[in-house]
Length: 191
Image (cartoon, rainbow, N blue to C red):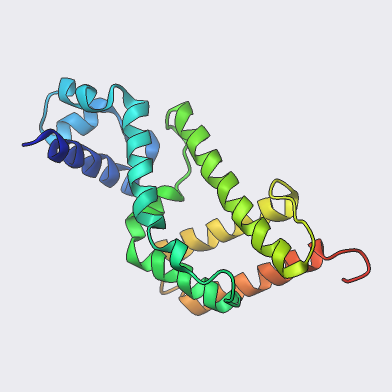
């Protein structure tokens, strides 16, 4: 097996573990055992557990976000944007589960990487909310933090049980969240 194929195999094993049990269940020993390779081979590919989980998060993030840039953020209403995002959740559910997973039990570097991704998501949300309102919304302020946390939870619920949390319910909550955020962030006197 080529080095690239072996790396893919090891990341696939780690992906399956995280998708079912979370980041805390991943270890070099377990990945090696489930891939039926020597631990040294895992270390050779990733250096350490942090390298393995970071490579996994990078790969799964790239898969999850591959098409999100094509969502019509500029001209789309909330439903159109929401449907575009839901399409990408449906296209790569395992990758999204990993991206949205709590990092409990993972290496400290994983927390930093996830924090950077969340900061980026808040910046995008703040930019679009600012555009809609005609005022500046702080990407690190409480509105964007609450909005992102709620949207992440909606996505997790939908991914775990799409029958109980169907697209239309997710969209209804998304509309309510955006309406709330716009009321909270509206310039004084425009509420």
